[in-house]
Every structure is written in C-alpha cells, then in structure tokens.
Image 1 (cartoon, helix red, strand yellow):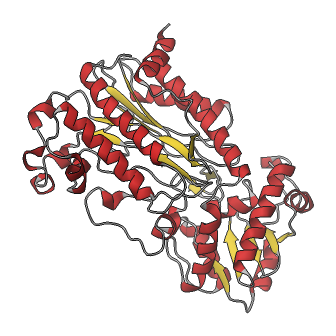
Image 2: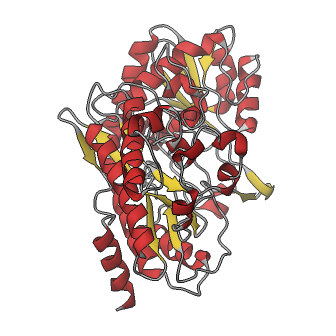
Image 3: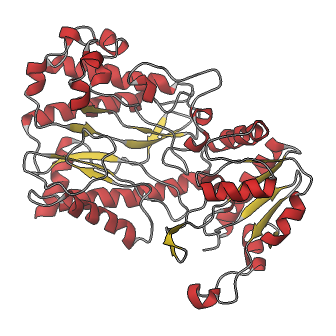
Length: 461
C-alpha cells in the first residue's frame, strides 16, 4: 500500500533530518530480502527492516535506499513478467516515486552508483540481507556489528528515532487501540479447562480482523514465572493466573507492547489480590516518575522501592526498603528491567545494541537484575518507553544458594509459601514522555483489580 500525503510528508521530513545529520557522508540502507520458510515460494511474512521502514514505509521488499551526500534514491528489483499473475497488479516505479517523493531506479543500477565510494550502512538482523550489503559495498557486513565508518550513521539514526514525531505517535495510538481490543477479547475468552492457546487465538483474532499483525510472539501463559514463555499447551486451572504479554502493530508497522495478568476463575484469590496490588502500585509509582530529564534507571529503581515496600507490608521481606533494593534482594523476585524503548521495534533499536539504549558514558551494571536493564538514558519529550514491573517465584532463582545468599533472613520463605497460587505477575503499559510529564498510551486496557474482574464477567454473561 502506497503512503498517503500525510505519511509522505513524515517520510520526507525524516529523510531530510537524517541527511542534515550525515552531511556529505554517503549511506545505504536495506529494506530486507524476503525470507523463505522451507522453499523459495513459501515465505515468512515480509517486514522491512525498521531503519528503512522509518524513512520509506512498508511494502518494499528487497529495496535499497542510497543517500549520495545530497539526495536519496530508492533502488528496487524490477518486476518479473509473471508477477502480476501471482501477486496481482503492483505499483510502477513512477507511481512509487510520486508516492514517496523520491527518485526510483532499478536495483541493477545500484552497483554503478556505489562504485568507488565509501558508504556507511546499518546491518539488518537478517544474514541474507547483510550478505547483499557486503557484496554491494565490498566489505564485511554482519548482523549486530558496526564498522567504524558506520558509527556516524548509527548515531544519527539513534538521535532521530529516540523522539517519536506526530506521525509515529498517531501510529502508536492505532497499535494501542487494536491491542486494547485483543486484551479485552483474551479476558472474555478465559475459562478453566481450556488451553492457553484458546485465549491466544481469541487475542490474535482481533489483529487478523483488522488486517494487522502481532508485534511479537505473544506470551499467553499460566507459567508467568517463565518471562518469555511462548508455549501454549497448558490447561488453565481455576487457581491459575494467566499472564498475557501481547501487542499488535499498526498498519504502518508500529507496535504496542502490553502485559496484563488476570485470574482464570474470573476472581483473584486473596493472595493473588495482595501480590497484584504490590505490582500495580510499583507500576504506578514508576509511571509517576516519568518526565523529561529523569534518568530511566531511576524509574527502574522507583519500581523496585515500591515493590520492596509492598513486600515488606505483606511480611515476605524484612528490613529497610532502600537496602533491599540496593543489595539486590528485590531483584530475586523482580529480576528484569522495568522496561525498554518503544518505537518501530518493540525493543526499539536493539539491533544497534547498547549504543541505542545506553547514553554515552553509561554501561550496563554487572549486578543481578540491573544487568537486564535495557535502557539507561535521560528521558526527553517524544521518547516512548514501556513500564513493566513484576513479581515472580522463579524456582531456578529461589533454589540457587549462590544467588539467594544476599537475602539471608530478609526473605521469609514461610510467608512466601502462602502465595503459592502466584507464579508470576507482570503489568506493562506503553508510556509517551511529554513536555509536562507522561501519557499512558495504553491506559484503556483494564488493570485495576475490579476492572479486570468486570471485563472477565462481560465474557461470561
């Protein structure tokens, strides 16, 4: 689908901003080669690499965009004579050129345009596309690795993509809307005696009905203690909590990333309710700290302090809240970072590693828990992040004497055992940093205890 006038204006503005940052540095960006699943004509769904998509939009497989130091030119494979038979009518080069306000030439002309030039690029996550770039540029290009000459391009792209423009925010709102529909459908579909896959199907049906895709492999599981569980065969029991980490994409490829946790029975037990409130208060405390100038690491620590206070009130932990956080005791029950950048990727720009997520001069901690923090930058207006604290009983952590030595008698395992019907709880929202503070883009998805139970009752009525 070709972009409309509003989308075209956004792409033009982004390309112009990147060109200004690059100056006379030449750059080549690949969309991505379609990937065969098991034979050439059976392909995985195509999605352009995000840096390319940011500048030109979706629907241009095997394309290359070349900035020669003055202008952008799009190089596309020429259509085969029988493409119309299999794929229907496709836009001509002229139509694409007009729609994107950019010259379009055949891919066969690209080697001559590159000959004798030093050209920066950004590796895609796909090896096949990196091999194409390597052949064109006459040098090694590997996923996840930047050559020294590529670093200025990477830094310029990071600076540009850290702040979401109006067109991007509009797309993110669309993603939030479809994701809200999916989570409501999941709550309504949940029943004891069904497989997790039934709930997953109900949630993904909302995406399919709107002709959009899931933004990532959905997590729909009664085993919330497995942080990235993508198995769906378990039967849901009345005492279980179901953790659903599910987000949809907008038509332009922008994702939402949302987690909710709800009771399979439709009503939280007393212990589930108590721990859920701990996580919800931690999430609200973290969201409240989001505003321009705040270091994201401090948002993470705010969530941990609120978690410590909640677990102290329940008697699960003993001691001083600040010390429990500083010593990493809370990290044994909340072992991941509080969230990450959100943009065209669910974990935005992580193909560029910590260069994107960590401000210059900042490096990852080696401490358990903090080592998994994906973002350590100061927040600025236009930045979008997720806020997703959790509490988990992970057997591999709790049974590891080396890891648990730091807790000593500050973790009361007898009290923790009372909460055996809680394997894992996570609550995640997408948050936009504004000039005044923050906006929760996914606020329409129920997360208050009473609202979650009411949404589930709507499905059983």
